[in-house]
Length: 68
Image (cartoon, rainbow, N blue to C red; front, top):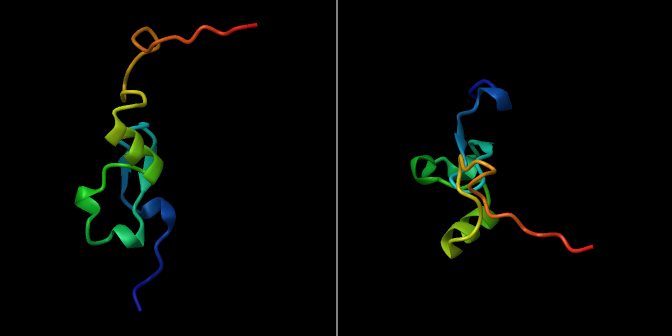
C-alpha cells in the first residue's frame, strides 16, 4: 500500500469563479487537468454568467445601495 499523503501535500488550483484555492480530490483523479471550479455552485454561476471576476478590484465591481 502506498504511504499516506497529507492534505497539504496534495496539488491545488484556484477556482475560476470565486478565486479560492481548492485541493485535489480522489474523484477528480482522472480529470484533474480539466477541473476549473471548486464546487457545483461555482460551476453553475459561471455557466449562467454571474458572479465576480477573479482579480476584480472593489472599484470595478458594481455596488449595491442599501435601504434602511
